[in-house]
Image (cartoon, rainbow, N blue to C red; front, top):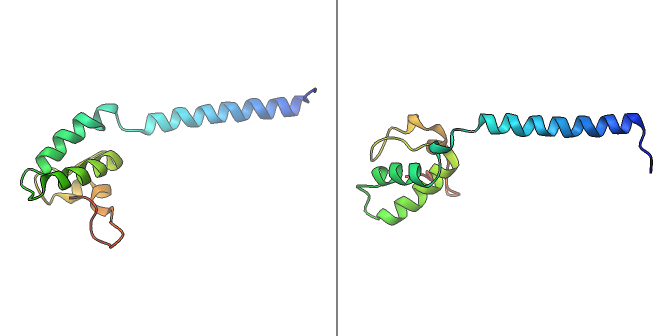
Length: 98
């Protein structure tokens, strides 16, 4: 089946735009060291150090860190350092992140 020049041009344009979007999205992501196990584990360990149920605090802190790519400093408060962490709510309206 023959493709017209217009169809070929449109397909090439679509592929190029898609590639450009992928490159742009990759460039806008925070650096790899700012997320993932090591970063989140160390930040959440400090955040949850004084919590009564350490394992539950770590579970939710790690979830929040993976999504938000940041954890506020200290064991509580300082939520303005990480608005995503501060604003993520559980279904009941309470804060999701410790």
